Length: 615
Image 1 (cartoon, rainbow, N blue to C red):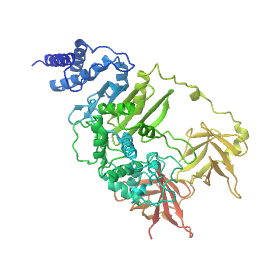
Image 2: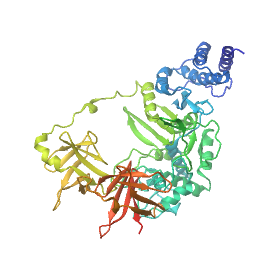
Image 3: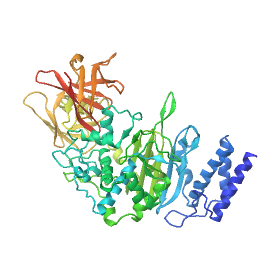
Image 4: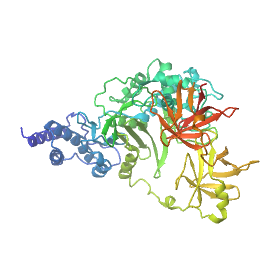
């Protein structure tokens, strides 16, 4: 059979079905609700043009062409019916609209209905399966709002309270000086160290070792310290939502997967959504995640854990329309539930966070948005709703370099260009304050060096660049960091930003610094002479249940850190007894004799995990 005739006949059959209102899977007739302009369904000639375009552009089998035609017909046609600017939205994802790489799906919801949905790129490179709006994605931290919602349902029934201490439901978690409540967990203010960072430190290999719910809770139970006292700070921690999933399981006797299916996904009709708590479960229409290696091309990148709460929600952009409608119409739950769900966290200082219950409330171009992003292995996701404008946008991508948060904002800029405020460039053009560098040269030079942040191992570094002082956490060079602008003999502004810094003189030696009431002791100007042999040895962490070896480095490297399951890493000296390896920071400690006795290890979500040197 001639391929062109086959494509033509397929288009005619589909178009006749749409005209007749037949139940063609995925075909959505035009709807009357919402504020976007509405029109009738696209005519057959336009659908046929799409089909011929695909056929002429790609020399593949008739079946594959037909599949592509179905995709374009089903959603592009429906989008035309809603007068959505297809070409402009397509331009956002154009780079991914190819058959030799992964890509993204996107959907637009208005008044709780899908007005545009489309896939760009491939769901599976091995079998040549294209992405479609029904493709199922691992959506990472978008999961958190569903976990929080499950707990909200239990709160509404009086079975739990946000003010319950975590040990009431998960007694394995140690008690600390200040109690940790479920409210702390949902707002990331508990101080509990992040499970992923802890597991990686303990030797788990990302995408190589299976991680279970029990593994995560076990390592949390080993921790003798918190990142900070509960309620004092906000620091994103996946551990809190893993514990909330455990609360649901222990209160109801059901897994989070079972509870969410019966109480959330089933009632909302989210038929392709589930919490993926068994990594061996077969998932129809699953999109595989990928990473790109420059020399080797694309490689599969899929999360290797059977753990839910903080992550592991599997869903589609189509099903997210039903969730969006629930947040709009309050389908599940009463007014109190919805009020709680959007209540933002409050610190002990009285400061209000942007983080609510698994969802972030932020402004964008004069409008309020609620939503969340996600990133795991080769998956990236973003869901953003504009409640005042009754519009939601979601994008899921299956490659690690994707930035769906940016794509969602770009789509919003297109769809809501009349409703959103113009972007002002005034702040970006603001020049730093003028400073007489000759007058302040001696003072600024005296600030140069490293200062210890008492909350973790990451130092504050001040250096000079073209006569001006700059500051940055970690190690700074050139024009990085913020400017240190003198405002008085011992007071400085950190520009740009609201922070102020002052000098605290000591009886001897250079002064310390104080920023926002936190004192930073002076550590020294930088790396001095290092005796590598003084650090060499084996170090054990009771909190991680593992040991590391510090050994002499190779080549220019002074020291290296090795583990039986992980690659050896070079330790780069930064200040006296301070080293770093990528985003990890190590501060070695010395006993009364002056010999190295251990070290603490910190990164962005874990502070000061202690290691003791073995004899």
